[in-house]
Amino acid sequence: MDYVYGPGRNHLFVPGPVNIPEPVIRAMNRNNEDYRSPAIPAMTKTLLEDVKMIFKTTTGTPFMIPTTGTGAWESALTNTLSPGDRIVSFLIGQFSLLWIDQQQRLNFNVDVVESEWGQGANLEILAEKLASDHTHTIKAICIVHNETATGVTNNLATVRKLLDHYRHPALLLVDGVSSICALDFRMDEWGVDVALTGSQKALSLPTGIGLVCASPKALEASKSAKSVRVFFDWNDYLKFYKLGTFWPYTPSVQLLYGLRAALDLIVEEGLDNVIARHSRLGKATRLAVEAWGLKNCTQKEEWYSDTVTAVLVPPYIDSTEIVRRAWKRYNLSLGLGLNKVAGKVFRIGHLGNLNELQLLGCLAGVEMILKDVGYPVKLGSGVAAACAYLQNTIPMIPSRI
Image 1 (cartoon, rainbow, N blue to C red):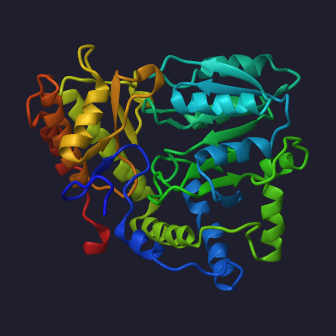
Image 2: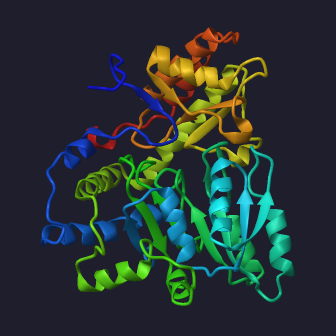
């Protein structure tokens, strides 16, 4: 029984945790098993190989740590860096702010490059810092690929081009929590040294697995990194990888079966098709927002996110009331505005195992809520704009042709 019952399905449109597909739920519906039996290592071996697909890497080494994205952050930092190391980190929203806070509390020398919330990382300043760093004091660049609080996506290819242009050896550490497996992400091609995501985002699983992938360069850096780590130590994993048992401590067996099913669904749809679907969902949402006469928190088209849209509301409306009313009246879950944009934006998450008709239901709900709170929206305007675009772009379902 739900703690607070509402008829029908809850329409979950926060930008994570996201909807869990039925095949994944069924795969996880099983008893506990002995993770030291031959079955779990055999499955783990295939998962470690197949999970490389979502990072688009052939050379990276993945780690599936029983944690959240926050733990994956810590794993990336402590395995590759030493206290006092200088790192350049971009502050563009709430989640990049939290990662910077972690970096500072881990005693790194954090060179913060701050942008207005709604803007992307200032890569011109990065270029200046790299150009002037003749002695290579910068040990790592830390960047959030997709800032979930503001709906801003950064251009990682440009970051790599800058590092290569200045022949700078700094590691590139990327938070891909709300991007990997939904947005175009190319670990090998973009020279990403550590990439990370969480199971509750585009993979459409429950929270509980922090997926980290390390390049050969990052693994080499871990040999000399002096940061204290125990639970997140890659060396413990690598030792058990060599033994063929894979786990230095107890994993969630149910989540591993869920991950197996989730990866199978991605393979069936095709990762490029998954990314294209998210592109359609993002574009349809932005067209609806425009039709409502509202503005996107993201200030330039080049930064638009295809996994979350942060919608600015007029000053006379408190966006918190929109989120509250969505849940209380319509059984619709939207994302709150966080920190600097609290009360100013509400967020529509459109990532994970989600289709176009589900999104249209959300957009219809938002229109009614906007009417409820006194915004003069024309009912059907956003839905119609989204429909007109989607009707011309939704492909046939490959398995049903």
